[in-house]
Image (tube, rainbow over all chains, first blue to last red; front, side):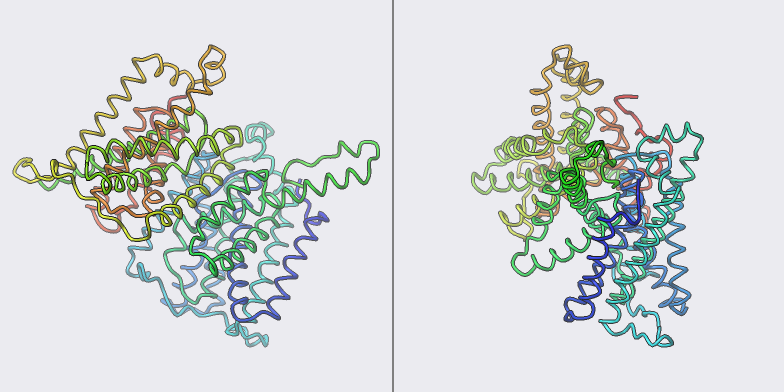
Length: 334
Length: 286
């Protein structure tokens, strides 16, 4: 079961978001860039977690939703001349619709077949955008504006302010998704992940919940896309490519899915590592690859799963009371 | 008319290369229930090893024979280090770990052979072209088609007419039952895995004169090969062959119809199959 205010999860989330805010206030220009990129990936990885960690639907197509969010936002502002305040909700909604459609089309698939189907839809969108001259084709769209919040005294064109806003947005997404997943809806998603047939036998609409989760996951990933477009002030078809989806998948799985905070941790670690490694070797791919293999050898439930297990073992050792040894949460759900 | 025949031949030739890569991927999936995304690496290794053998010996037959055999060695290493340990780890863990191995393999290729694409010439014996209904068509591409069909026929014979083939089919159907009846799965699995890697290596070295040899080729072939396996259905030879032909046709004719469709046709095919028949067209297990 997913508890929003599980002590370990809350402590880690406070640590991560707190460190993000601190870094946004004190970091140099380079650190601010890393921070904004981390926030984009953290939101996308949390969206991925909604499907992978709870209903065990591992998507290789989250780039489709991130790309849809980014392109709807960029298209409406750059090509349509709409103000960002109108384009951003439309972009999130558009990505949600994309999630709904993919959810509907894949509702009969599971496991690797779900992964392949999402990969297929993502690649189709990639090719479509790549060959659409109206959307800039291979070059993408440039000159994407950031929202103007000067009425609130906030200047998003400033790198520090933008990084801070990005971290706060990621924290807000964490809270809202956490609230949702701690509800009956979240428990139904977990149940679908554990045994779809049994949930169906209980009279709960599996398809309805799966499609709703996919739409929500798409919308959240679309928000990451809007943030990415605002950050770079540029969108490119690379957002749709399966290697981008693979990066989101990697971060979420390395951090540990089913915990919501794990994907945030994974995004922070992998983005940080990417830039640290770039300083001393051109073989980032090898480091990322070994990281992935190590993540599986370490137990398969990611770094958060590892920490949670260690914490449980410690708690048992400290309090060997009656029944204490038998209190156990399901793997990855504590 | 001749234009369409050339396109059809191109499509079949592309299908045969995909078949050589996908057959190992599919059989490992069907037999061991392991999703091995690192399989694309063996295709790239085959091309690079073939190039090196060609540089060292100047002999095309040696390059084409040794490349698949040598590809079996990294195959055996990947089996022992990763695949054998991950059979019961679940598809998720397999996808992450083998994706990691694929990334490592790309960097290994870059470190060993460099970033610059390598030229692999067409063997002089197969360099010419023949007339097909008045249109010249390269002999080499026709040879690729012939090789693909020969490999498919050989695999079919082995699978349907030999004891080893019967063991593989039995293990695909129900591995516990096969083991209980005396099939040595501990020996069968690595042998089948390494053969699958060697076939991917053969696909790589055969593809080398048609494309340039570059570090990303294993990643590029992976997604279409996975599409072939899923479209065809897991673990069946006929399914893989049908899947390869459909993907090759969709890709080639999608590109002919219009640049907007190039590439998208393959994924539209996959999406259609998954929506209508989520288990693939010809799965080995129903």
